[in-house]
Amino acid sequence: MQRLFLLAGLISPLFCSAQYNFFKGYVVTNARDTLKGQVFGREGNNNPSSVRYKSSPSAETQVFSIDDCAAFGVDGKEFYERHKVKISLSRISFQNVPNQRDTTFKENNVFLKVLQKGKHVNLFAYTDAIKTRFYVSTHEDPQPVELRYDVFYHPQIANQVMAEARYRNQLVALFRQYGISERHDSKLERAEYATSDMLKIVSLINGQTQEKPKNPITRFFVGGGIMLSNAKYQGRHALASKNAVSKSSPSPYFSAGIDFFVDPAFGKTIIRMELSAFSTENSIAAFTEDSRHFHHQLKRQSLGITLMLLRNLYNGLNHKIFIGAGFAMHLVNIKDNTMTYSYLPPVYTEYIYSEKGPDPEEFQISLPLTIGATIYKRFEISGAYTIPGNVSSYPGYRIKQDRYRFGLSYLINKR
Image 1 (tube, helix red, strand yellow):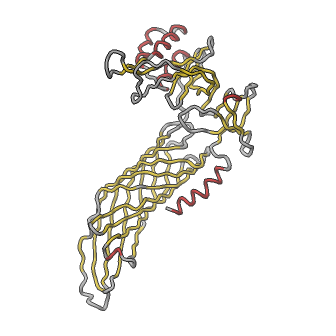
Image 2 (image 1 turned 60 degrees about the vertical axis):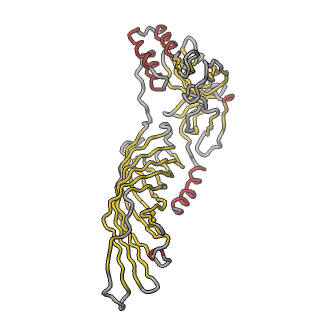
């Protein structure tokens, strides 16, 4: 484990000092000059309040605030424009429902995320710690206006929550303004206050096909490699002595799963679900002071599911370096569990006998850590370490096992 994360600590500063998370993009200044170069790809939900820019990979980083940047974009990923807008302060989370309709707002210059630019209507989004809001502007009125959605308790009926979807009426007005037939009004009744539904409605108004996401949310993979494990006794047992020797044999493992990108545009943070199958073979032996020999042979097959959070330390276009940690559950099938007792020759060599060893747990939970790299968007090499967990637990002693895994995966749909 220490070797894995020492390697991560040595490698990541080298990449971070180079082209860490900068992508081809542009910045538009207040003078309307367009500066082409590289823009920092900021992963997160909230809209930014500044942008980091470099004219070339080796140039110094410049920081443009809202006051000195009219717009910026990361090619093929996301685009922002500065606008002075009214920002509603009402909360729409059902955990923080206000007692009455909240009409408070503030007016600020902010970077609005551009969701669609059309021949009639432009759609924007603004997210802060309170909520996500959607804005629209038209060519006749370029000032973005918030599409309102409010949640509050009913003033006469106790504990009844009202959802006031005024955005539907605002969009109906745009339907009529741009000649959208009333037969499409039913789509507004079903439209939720969410990015996908807002894009569908605005695309209808603009008479254009909604673009498919350029950056997929998910990615599938299959892989395999070598598994090594180490088992040790702890507590009051002959095999827990200092002279106990633990040996293991390498065995293959196979895996398949799906990755979910927290921010598909940049893919820096990943939630991974993996199904794996592997076997482990351990041999633990020790001699006591009276020359008795104890030997435990343990072979197990495991089928497990792992939920892991991965983070790219280096997030280049074609190559990435990541670390991760997770939580795994395994069903275990015991293939061999033999405890052998004997004496060293030449004393009583005929006294050798075997019995069933301590019963291993058939359901186990483990905590894996990993480090790896993605190469040319298609291949992933990785090493993983599983923190020692209980194999068997008895009053007075227990058996713990940790695992090392080294493998190669194929990313079925690259991004």
